[in-house]
Length: 321
Image (cartoon, rainbow, N blue to C red; front, side, top):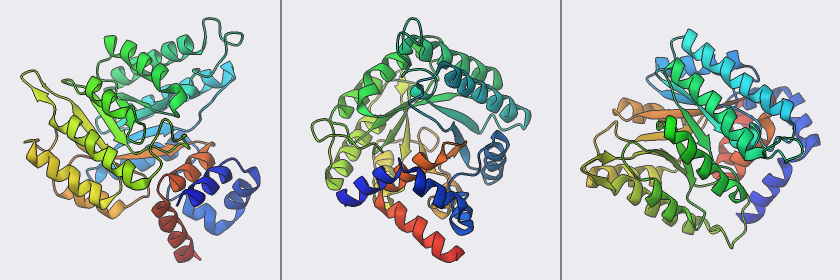
């Protein structure tokens, strides 16, 4: 499946394909099934619908690799507006926000941002965390490609000094992730475990799907199994794979994990029936809602991350035709 993945990642950078998908009425309708809209109100409305079904959400204002300080500031402003709207709608208890550090300054150079991108990203992340706490919710720092992993974890460490509720994200396909899981599997630590969506080289990441699955399970065992007298970490199990969901449920039972001491996470529009099934069974379920004008690259990476998602997408297109 590697050639298909590489092709989808290439298409994620194609403006002509983006225009085609955006302008065709059929595909535009289907895209809305995976990205509810470009505006804050669209995302908040989608979160409200899911909350009514007993499903929590994390909202992501799409964008990354920002090299313009004004754009980073605009992204922060968008998150502050989002948090105000979630609070005003009474959704903060069930909805948090996910933030990519390169969207709020991490990629800025020293000339553009005195002190460097890390300093700008940290201060911007602090502003978002402060607003989230005031609204009664939390922030999770999304993980990006492997070149940003160390900086992301360093900023997470700094944020957790004042905002220990800040969530982390780890990607199972990276060779380093088992060690990162052990470092973050402490009481109260919120850790989202996903497979990984970036095109990483073989010297830093597993590229065989079976090896990625095995790595995911090894990481699950660390996050679900490491408990002590002071408590346990809070794993956020991000997967649509039925087999991995079953394994995670089995491991939670084996390690004596009560429902509510972990959660399942899925993407907006992917396996909504399974989302509702898990919620009805008493599991905590959180859906990742992306929104904004930069939806195209996100959508193509999601299809590349798991080619089965492409089947969902194409099936939806056929049904809408």
